[in-house]
Image (cartoon, rainbow, N blue to C red; front, side):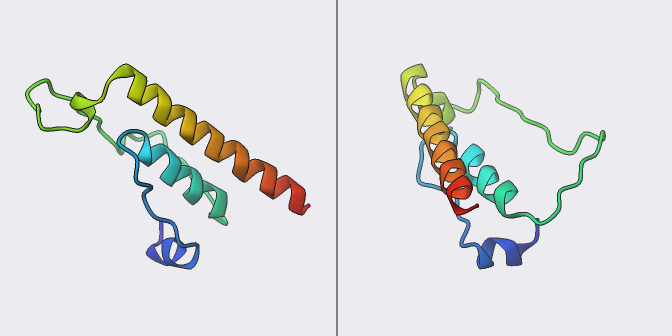
Length: 86
């Protein structure tokens, strides 16, 4: 993504303990004028048990669920606002 898109649309990572990337990328996708895809692997997710300092390893299932619900509600709100404008 272009940095200018983030600046122009004031897109920032939200202050969540979990799922902040989901909400961030929803904002990016909503505001992108174009999107392209690839079949190449461009992202590796590595959650190692040795990383005890990671916030993800300190997050309970209930906290993760609450964060995911917050993101779902955020997306629903965005969609409702967008459809009202049309």
